[in-house]
Each structure stands twice: as structure tokens, then as C-alpha cells.
Image (cartoon, rainbow, N blue to C red; front, side, top):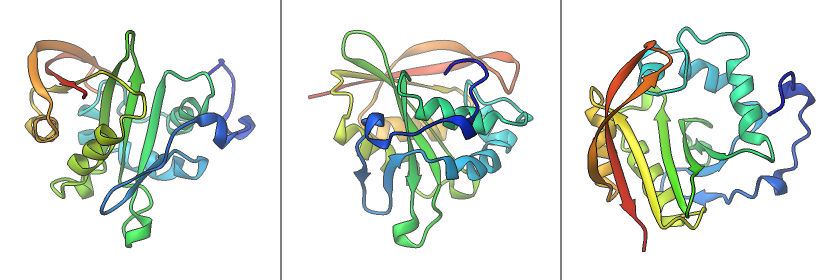
Length: 189
């Protein structure tokens, strides 16, 4: 996204997003919409959610959620982001997000977060399973990492067939520090 581009100025061509809609038992994974900004800002303003990610700042600055959605809708993006939308099953329209970032050589990095009110519901596992099953990037390998103080997210990955690869560390914007991580890999069919 070019510097200075505002979400209000973004002309969205949903076909250009080239992201499939993926259905699971309790919700649908769909491309983000401009209308998701408010719920993304609400969930990611929670310190616990922000500190579980590498890139979400805390406190969340004004316009950060708008910028996230604008980047997700940019035709030149490297990361595809799906809303976990439960509205067809009387759940919230946005429960969290799951994403795939293009890497080299048919590899992608998977990321996810769930709004704190929906933790321990199985939504993260179901979303990751659905995305892995669909494999929209046609990846031969998926990578993911979680902070070592977040064993719940590690369980999501192992429940979805990811295998522990090793320890590392990554920068957390919310924590303003390097944080120990566990790295996982999933070879695709």
C-alpha cells in the first residue's frame, strides 16, 4: 500500500482479491471488508490479543485497523487475510482472522488471532483446519510460529497437523521486545 493511501480512497475490486470463500462447520472464511474495521479495532485493542502477535501495537494507534484492512484489500499485497465470519450461524460477523503470507518456492506462512471473548471455543483450530484443507496458495509447505508463552496457539497448530521445527525469537511490537517462539511446519500433500 502506498504511503498516504486512505481506506476511504481505496477502490475495492473483490474479484481482484482472488481469495476464495472457505466454509467450515460453524463459520465462513471470507476476504476482509471495509465494514470489518470496527471489530478489528475492538478485538486488537485488547493487550492480550496484541501481545499474542508480532505486528499489532498496543495501545492500538488511531487508524491502525483501517491500515490493516487497506493492506489486506490492496491488489499488490503479499498476505491474504480472511475474516472468520460466524454470522450465518448466529455468531459474530467477525470472530478473528486467519492469514497466509506468500513466501518463496511455494511456501506460505500462516497466522491467526481470535477475539479474546472467543478463546477456548475451537474456532482457531477450525479456521486453521479449513484454510489448510483449502490450501488456496497451493503451497507445498506451510510455516507458523507462536510465542512460547502462548501454548494454546501451539496446540491449535499441532491439532492441525503442524510439526514442531525448532525454537527462535521474533519481535513483538506490542511488547516492544524480542520474544522466544516455537516454529512449526506442515508439509502439504
